[in-house]
Image (cartoon, rainbow, N blue to C red; front, top):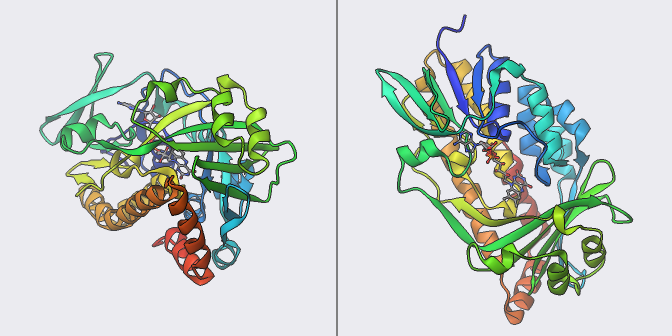
Length: 381
Ligand SMILES: Cc1cc2nc3c(=O)[nH]c(=O)nc-3n(C[C@H](O)[C@H](O)[C@H](O)COP(=O)(O)OP(=O)(O)OC[C@H]3O[C@@H](n4cnc5c(N)ncnc54)[C@H](O)[C@@H]3O)c2cc1C
């Protein structure tokens, strides 16, 4: 019987996946989410095979797959549509019986929330900090209320208030590029693979989703929080990307200004630790990464599966948190650092460098690409 209390801050992909994983091992966690309600938000998301394997461990892979779109192949093109690299995860998928999927963020969120008891999801609760009452942790919320808990799981994203208090020097860093996203009707766009197109103007990604929709993203170098970028409309993106190969311009033409989602790309420099006694940092609060490898949410879902694994192995949750940290520090550092470096190279804009990069990448042997893919997609469970 559960006698100790667990609280999760943040009802995002990490918080909800963790609550499900804990529920499966007999631990009920209360989830405190800052948004006033759970609303369908966001664009698309790649759920790579490692995320699907984690969902399998949590017992919900089939439900998630049913809402997603199978995506075994990924291409990088130059701006004329010539292949730079091609990755095929079919062999890895066959080996593990799992594949890469793409999903609408809102569909994923809805599927996760539906797994939980609505009474354990508390909305309108923005955590501002914590204090200690003996061994227990007291969380303060913006509305003046507090909760007291034995174990606190901080999964409130890259701007985590709990991390700010524990590690005041560890703030987000700007990657140097900014991103627009939207979901549109697929029209005649191929539904078999995801792609990125790398040109001197920037990068344009296309990801098929279930329901004959596609998710696209456009990335350009820019100063942080730039007013001109914030005011960008579809016509401005057409100006930058309109000369890219088909169907880039056609996809933009099907996008409405009001559907654009804009973010500067930020991450967290790898932290030295995630576990602080009976408080644990999870998901983006612990290891936010740039989206260049499509692994931020995947790592957050791995966190959920591995935390439950460690809690089953140990009678003492604090020991489980420490064991979790040991398993997660190196793996998440690998993702954050590789994604950061990949983003730098992908965002080169000098035409000569772009030409050299594209031609050098074409020379990388397929088995090297596959080895790198395997390192990302293979979990330790
Ligand atoms: C442009 C872009 C594209 C991406 N594409 C991919 C991809 O293809 N694949 C992939 O795996 N990842 C991708 N990611 C990364 C992915 O979105 C994140 O890694 C993932 O959402 C992290 O989940 P999380 O639950 O840890 O954090 P979040 O998603 O940030 O969720 C945190 C939750 O906590 C709530 N919250 C915030 N502050 C507080 C507070 N103080 N108190 C209580 N609640 C709070 C928020 O409202 C939110 O619900 C992308 C990111 C970006 C920016």
